[in-house]
Amino acid sequence: MSMTTTTTLADVAATSLSAVRTLERYGLDYCCGGKQPFDEACTAKGLKPESVMQEIERPQAPDASERDWQTAPLDEIVKHIVGTHHEYLKLELPALGNRMNKVLAVHGPKDQQTLSRLADVFGSLRAEMEMHMHKEELMLFPFLEQYGRAETLGRPLPPVPFGSVANPIGVMEREHEGAGGALLEIRELTRSFEYPSYACSTVRALFDGLKALEADLHVHIHLENNILFPRAIALEKK
Image (cartoon, rainbow, N blue to C red; front, side, top):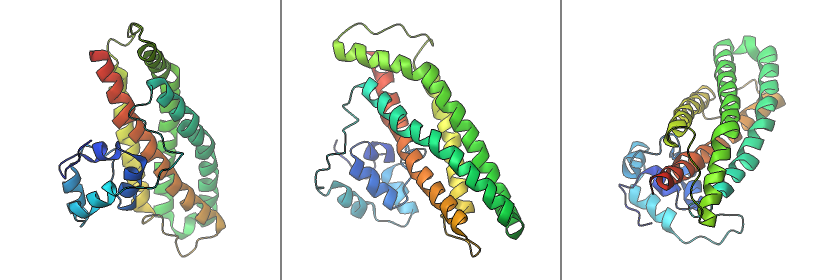
């Protein structure tokens, strides 16, 4: 695509994984805040839009692990999201929950206000994401896989059981907004994942895990909000 400084963060991120990495490096929220114009987001961070854009457009060495999800079949995108990002969350959320409980039990009295709130926000995020993934895997994603296979094989699209595919997608996007808000609060509570003075190995593991969770969820939500969902809606309108 031809990018300008008025292109949205979501559109910039959708061009390549290297663009995603550059946006992440500068703390530009391309998933939940993806509708923000690129130049406005850069200016708000004290960055020069032209400089960041040049870095994004600079030729990168080929990476065999990168996949152009903009052109991948819908069913392949769904399988990737479930097999990579859902499986990550199913393993990592319980592990982070255990670490959180240990940290709260041992260090709670030292930093009661921050750690209690951190546990509450994480607990709500975990419950929301576990239910969110269940709904996607039970209803929306199996249908989108059928959609993708029909498109690839040139067959008629199956009837939509939700009235419109935009209906469940709208619900998922609203839940993504809630997750984005929780991630932002976690970053604020941890001062961008800076270890506190009392940090033991469990505290460091917790903060490192929360930072990795944020990074994975940003890519996860980006793939759904900015690539999978818009393509499914566009396919229905053909």
